[in-house]
Length: 202
Image (cartoon, rainbow, N blue to C red; front, top):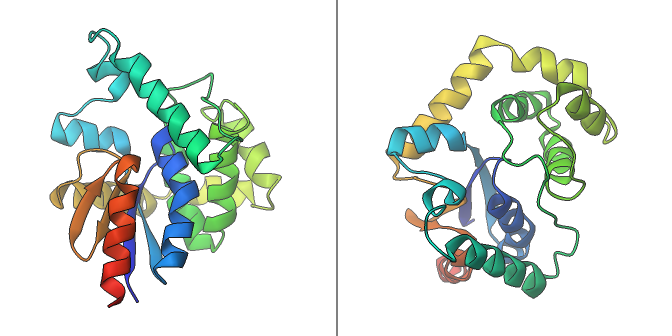
């Protein structure tokens, strides 16, 4: 089965938007999505990259156009539940450690759904542990277990190693996808991801 590797951090609205569209691409291509957690801040630090908010802050009209393209993407794919988080940017290091922990506990899907909704649909301050605990608990995730495991040294090391592995493969920002060893960066490359995944079926 073809695999679509999806390098992922809750920090980016573009990662969230891509995550909502990618399943239909995978279904059409009979492909499997493999989520690769990677800390976006760590990627930026390792590669010298910056978020669009920083990189384009001094470029007249650039950020406004980025937001226009985001609105177009939302409208094209019918993602009416999306909204920019009023607390953005949020430090997602604890959330990403939580994702590693949730994976180990067998509740990755519920955890990801809860955090993504809280961050990019409900406008919650997901930088506050109490808010995170309440939000994941509402989706049936044992927040005490996730928080406890998130503090384990091996969980921390796993996230570090996963981020380093992403950088070693050429990842410089998120969302990034790999299909058949080829890298595709950004939600605007999803059509290319679709084409590559469909071609891999043959």
